[in-house]
Image (tube, rainbow over all chains, first blue to last red; front, top):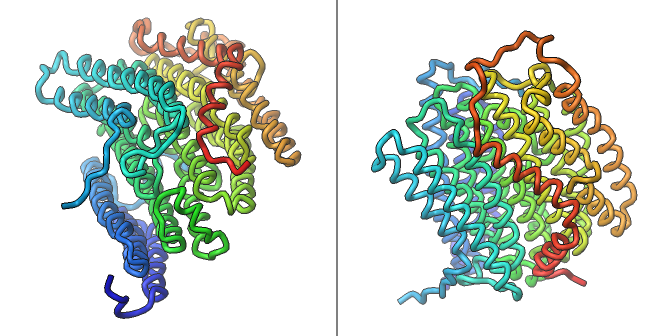
Length: 105
Length: 490
């Protein structure tokens, strides 16, 4: 295994944590379902970055394989999400999650 | 040349039979003529679940010594086998309940394909032995369930429920994934025994990761404070899907919570037992208090399922073989009662064509005595009355908490049970003590259609609910062998 080049693991973790926090704030605060789905992807990619950073730091391939699998899962999840947004849009519902209140939460 | 791991196909047989069923049911959508499509797809899905149940029984018998298979990614042990049996039994019953559900028939085959696929995901989830299979199986069944919620595109409620479930479920999975990444970073291992053996229990990364893993799993088990999606999604989803989510998803999530915590984090037990106990208390308080004010029966049952998750988590928090046994035993009557109760709600819903509330359940017990009496038994079972398995289940989880030295948890549980009597008995009262004529309600389509499959499912649930009270010893032995496949630190 090549010795770790570039920044230390803590920097990777900091960026990953920042991405994860940005994504979670987006999910919690934004109204547009498209942006919410985008934020979910950012959260998953933050976790991916952490996995890959750790994998490289530990010299173990497991984390990288995990990250590849997560990308496939994230893609299928966003496909379902976009499908739902399109179906809702066809029913002429405004794209604002605060207005989705037929079911009172 | 990359070495290929040996694949123990027998261990994967329940998952495979459900996957095959899902594939064949999906082919039915294009190959089978429209008039036959639903019957064939439902039959295939039912057969898949029956086969998975059979393989579960066979695996239980033949896996006395639990071990990892497929490069240690999957556990072949009795815990997996028992949880597979519960999930497959639930799926079989739900297939029966769902058969007469759909008003629009053009997606009937996809409906059953997704039902089988999500069952396959759960059967894989309960056997997960490393963080990767855990996450993949979690998303596998979750994505199937998101689509199942929205399968009826004409119902705005279903679409809304699906989008809410997807966003909050996706959030929960992302938290779980980040937790997995932190645990991996702290230990360098993805497999549960490896994480336990790494000896990094004081590492801050590991403790953070553990907390995020617990939160992610609690989202799926719909335990408070991670429950906010539950009432909306349970209300908006088609009722048979709700039954499946309440029974099977919760079973899978709770069994995996037990397995992950006991196998991968034995050295941090002093932290997670407290965390799980706090989540259990939150679920009991939130679930019971919110259920008190509900008028919609599905919402009431949703909050009741949150409080039931609280009771079952008490078993997990005890961190002992007794607690594990209590959890597994409790799951058997719980799944039967949930499927049964939602099936009765589905029957009433089809009769009236409107959402079922306490008001329009009036007189139901006299109109449809079989369903009425079954519902009565399910509600008493949820409340923990004797002559139902719910009583023994509650007794066992309290015994486990008491043995752990947590008398306060027993007291909270007993108080929660007392509060729950109000809404469970309230529904019984609505069904039996008011006359239909007072409400001027007429069934939409004349006399209700005979639904043999739904009634068979409800009667089966009734038999399991009551039978688990009388067959305590064999079931407890079953659970004991299953729980003994976990590496208890004693």
